[in-house]
View 1 (cartoon, rainbow, N blue to C red):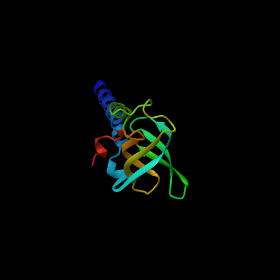
View 2 (cartoon, rainbow, N blue to C red; view 1 turned 90 degrees about the vertical axis):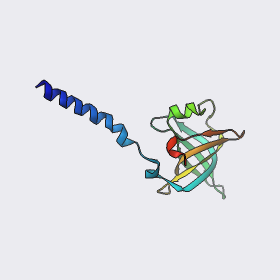
View 3 (spheres, rainbow, N blue to C red; view 1 turned 45 degrees about the vertical axis):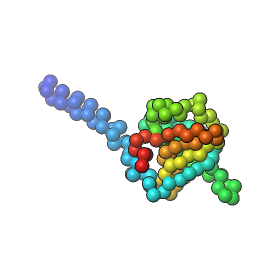
View 4 (tube, helix red, strand yellow; view 1 turned 180 degrees about the horizontal axis):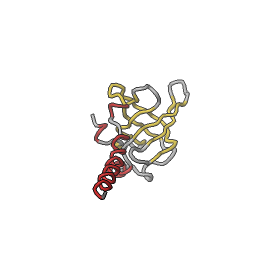
Length: 131
């Protein structure tokens, strides 16, 4: 009886440990390396959540129309190690993001670099986005 209980508990623990692995996706599953993008816009929201951060931008096109974009960045820990913090990037900041668009063509992408108005370049991604 103890052996069966031990096996069941071990199985449950292994399944729970595997859930984060299933939830994480590879770069190529969602983003297209053949669709590089450079967006210039205003930061409207920043979500520092695991496993990836999200930067929300308002981007004006040539006609002046504003489109909302979502850009995935690295984990909060990766961003902080790279110098991207709440103190370095406030809401309303004008910035340029270099990255890759989502395969589905929506206003979503993954960021590689972030350029501030003062010329400072910050790395947004994880090792997955280095191409």
